[in-house]
Length: 153
Image 1 (cartoon, rainbow, N blue to C red):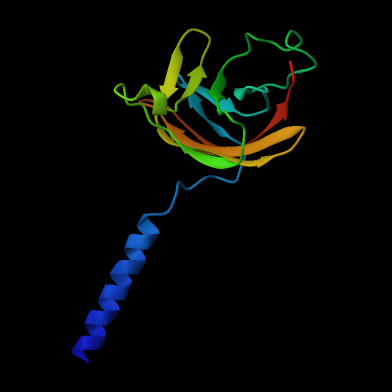
Image 2: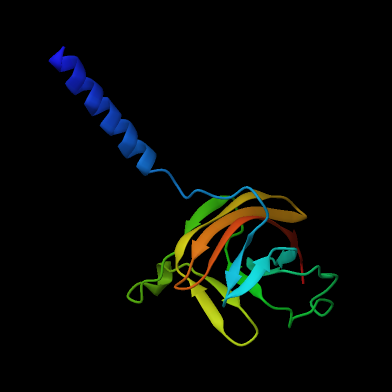
């Protein structure tokens, strides 16, 4: 009996350890959060051939590089190169900048660097890139899903 209890406790401990090692918990709703204290709800965005992405809280026209409102804020910027399915853990190590990965939020005057959490690209097609993020900075957080238009400027 005592062996069964000990074995059960070990199994429970193992299950708890495995559960604690899971990847970020993402919201499955539209990307929302704050940037510089301003509310942000994803409405539109693009990603170019180099993997540079911008996400806006207002609808945009991405016909060409000059057709959308560059000044729209707040907005989110990041680069994933090459563009492909996968999870990217945010990290900033000043001694290893080659392996740094951050997301930048911009409120119109200040850049806010998100250095904790994860961004995942979940699907890539010829016309769009789908993803999700669960990230934080010192003062802000963003969580949820997004779909970006692929542009070839």
